[in-house]
Image (cartoon, rainbow, N blue to C red; front, side, top):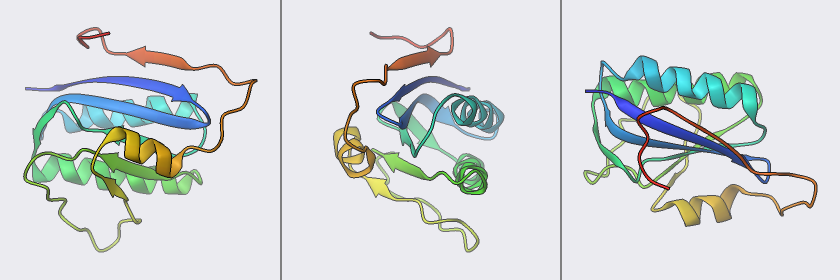
Length: 131
């Protein structure tokens, strides 16, 4: 089982939506999505987990690794709508990863004021359903 993802860049903020199960077999795909987002946007990246069915310890470690990678690039990572169990295994070396109850709250907390010169852009995996 793997994940599907969609990335949008808007208002100097990256929104990475992830669907499926973030387990050992999907961690590399998540890492690839983070690399994609890092190369195509600016500012913080919010990982929207609204459609995520669950995650394993390996999946959570992939999130911690992503936070490190973004930190090295001078950017931050935040989570929105973590899976129902509500847990994120703390990692002693991890940068702070803010966790928000939903995507609108996360956007409000991290997005700067919109500017007229920025256009929204979007990329997604072929299996992403919706919109």
